[in-house]
Length: 174
Image (tube, rainbow, N blue to C red):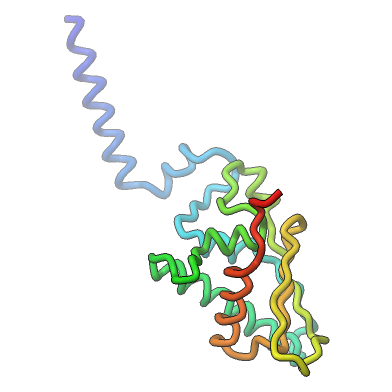
């Protein structure tokens, strides 16, 4: 008589598993702490979603350049994520995130996720008499400044950002 409740509990547990499999979107909130219940499986989506670009006036030529640069950034991150392999330069989206923010991983705590923002600025007054300007990063304030004069095409953007991340200094030196 004492063994009857055990199989009954097992049966109810299996029914619950079937329910959870059929209604994953509803059950997700039960197992993920905090108010932020969106799950990001792809790091490039997380990284791009948490950028806060400072755009120029809408409709201006500067604004159009800035939108193109942000599109290039999204394409670049997606290309690296989709390739699934480490590039010859050793680039991964995690490495780009470390270059931008000083940390390679996504924040885990809901409070950290809420405060995690990457500020994007654009430098339009670059002197174009020299060959190239590289993006500058302030990892402590999580700010990236892109030189708009040197990022006219996706291939230029890809080349310059690859060089900046590959040959930039890391945070492992004291």
